[in-house]
Image 1: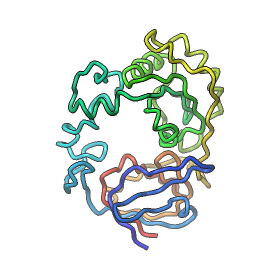
Image 2 (image 1 turned 180 degrees about the vertical axis):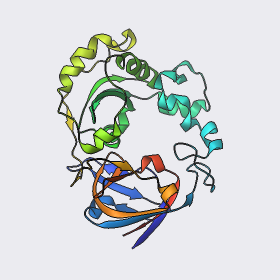
Image 3 (image 1 turned 45 degrees about the vertical axis):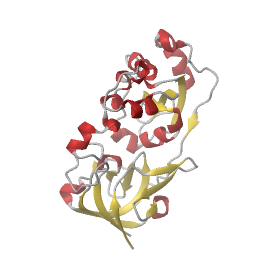
Image 4 (image 1 turned 90 degrees about the horizontal axis):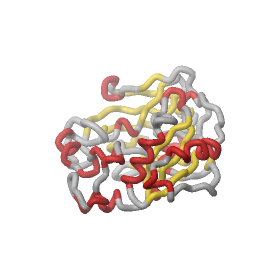
Length: 263
């Protein structure tokens, strides 16, 4: 069976274990059903997720011109503290920025390779944690806009990590943490503007990934350079395929690539 299409990040369902779906324009693959099977992935080309043209992908699945024009690729996406819609100030498209920025946002702690602080829209819980490969997470602040979440994250990352070590995450090289205790320790460092939004009554969320074998020394597949790869799929975690030979393939980092998946 051959499936073909443009890679976008896998869609997920919060179950035990997490359910993964690779979605193409005219078809989809329930990835969990491929575990312990040999699959081949072939590079065909590139297609910008915005303009749909066959152009080199620059970042986040966009060609270079779209990356610097699209409101969904503004600096405030990666740096929420730069959000300005609450001030009625436009970055690239104020209507779009109000739609995204002026909605409830969560500041959270997640444990993937280590305890880290992060920001996501409330509607993206627990999807964001799944995408990061976190096996446990907890909300610590719920605010009405992205700016407040951003400045809270900036304040807290002086005391806790804000990045995931992808190799440790894929090796499952982490220890269980008491995230409620972490939350209490970090409470005093929350900015004054956000202190009233602190959450002190919820529990950790546990996440379980469909992995039959973790890689000892994960090596990242550069599909564009290699052209094709085949191997036995033994796990999915975060947005990564994990293969028996320790090869891992980051679907999210390869958005915009046109591929064939041969099963």
